[in-house]
Length: 321
Image 1 (cartoon, rainbow, N blue to C red):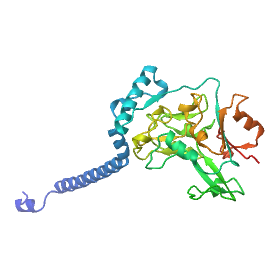
Image 2 (image 1 turned 135 degrees about the vertical axis):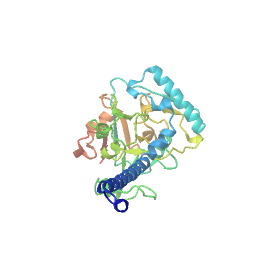
Image 3 (image 1 turned 120 degrees about the vertical axis):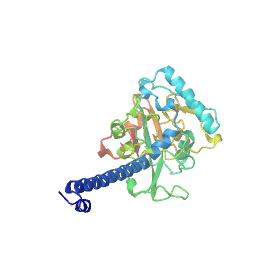
């Protein structure tokens, strides 16, 4: 019969195995718990902007259908809600409309680089018309100052701060080119952006998730991310707004030039064109053989930016000389 003292001092091998196994299991569990906590922490950090955006979004906004699925009654209800939100947030009574594309119209834009003087009046007009964030000094238009010996904006600068024009330089404005083969549309995972029948590429801001794939795909760097809630003094808010164009965009969405859709579909001109003191901008219906834009295309040697990208833009440049 085994000695009881020896049994107490020397536990059975099976018991030792169970004890070691329990310790290994405990360590394994601890590592899993720590790893899971680290993963959740990283995930929570990565999702913080989305969580902050969701916290400021009501249930109606979250459940809203895609623009193309909205009935006239849906739009009326949504526009009224957005108008109330704008008045609450900015203290201004706004009117949101949704003018449809006009029949037999495809818009085009042309810019005379010989005439442009680099004054940036177009930039200022875009900022005011499209309710840009004043704190970020936003605009959909960038004007490059480039050496007069070529047309390469890679050698240009945006931060010039001196009287213009300057001898030996020309000025090269860039904005959305509303391509017929838009790579930004192809990469959007939620189909929040598309090309309308009149040639304008639009965004349903309520369906944009802010992934910025479209910005990465755009060869013209013409899409912008709304990093913060827009700051606009009440007296500077443009109350005449379009759902797919210049309504105040929320934080966390992409935005871009829409050719002032809310204006041109009512027979007006883009704000940037009206503000140009040099007459460097031409806009009109490409399908109308009597339009000014058609005259430019047929009588001037026009070119498109980054033709090798095969985007087929409807924004053209030309030189008068």
